[in-house]
Length: 496
Image (cartoon, rainbow, N blue to C red; front, top):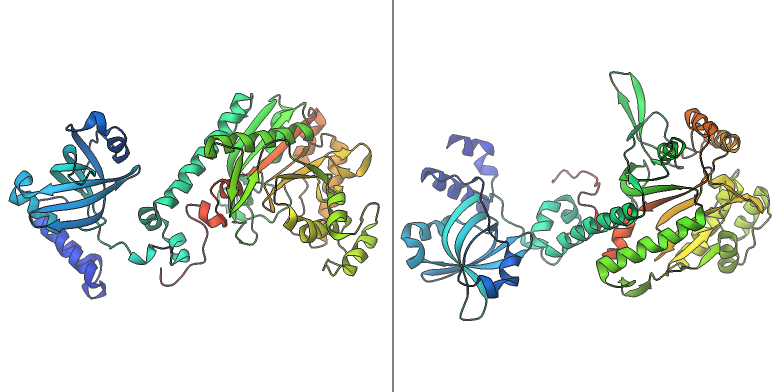
């Protein structure tokens, strides 16, 4: 027993926790293991409820967490919760005997028990299990905080997600939906001939996107490495190698700000198809969202934060410069970078003194257009200088064959006709390097091996990157990215 006392100084334990430790000691004194062992279940709570007509009167073995206890003389009712739902337990002294019934005094809300018994319906009509035996599988030493109910402390919910999942079943449903969405994406792509692959998380060069990377160090090789910001350049190397349809579902890492739409690590699905283009990928994007909506919601019309969103294809396609002209009244078409910067100044936008034309276009778009894009809309034809991996448009080499779908004002994906000209790609990389030297920490690095790969020949291709976290936010009606991440990044608190 001494080991129990030395886990924490007893004076530091609050009264409720001290009582639970006393119960733990009493159980051990009786030779009962409070932390149990393997338990063979025959049913879940949901199975008993759904199949009650055929299971009534049958024996069952179930396991889960005790969420409530109600004693009435020589009988006790409890709610047991497993992953599928809740079921009522009925303890009777004349069934269990005094010794086992007396063990109920050692049971606390939060304890995990293994139960055997008979399935029946109470006189009040509630489907229940009459308990014949019970086993302690895990003694809960810390009471569940009542303040969790009603979502009163959202910050604490994120920090202690394990408690959040126990007391808020709706939260668990969000993550079950997340799993279903990811499986839907896999099924959708595999059915269309895509092969799932894995590429390195640790990169010598942070490539595939304009973003600030995390840096780590490999001790054995004595070299710095970057956590990947995107798998794009590796996946396109596979197109060079002969794979024609590939995708990767996994984590990316960007050393940037945190917001309701951004987390330092996030999940994406990137896919590439040889002999395709941006039009092919836009159609695929529409189909993916519609497919998931049908699987998750049963309709291509969903509700997000009280507003109906119609995901039925086809979605409107609007060139970026036309959208800016429509919502800001400024036509940036054909302007030089200097002219664009002056136009921004006149509209009250703050841009860097040496901002490129594409950067100014992005600022106009973010300010005037993005907040207006509620229903699914493809924004197309982005400037070259902010799209270093996308193919130029044939009729306007200053723009690219690129698109971004927006829903509820959020960028949900990024795709384009892939640049497969190694000469143009090298020039774009050099322009990006010049931007890095001028202080742009998000500009692309030179990747000479990728240029070498393109020199062997990459087929014309279309590519797409889907933001899984935002997709889950959309389909679960979640306004913050932290609501769809099991363990979001939080600033440490001394009180944790």
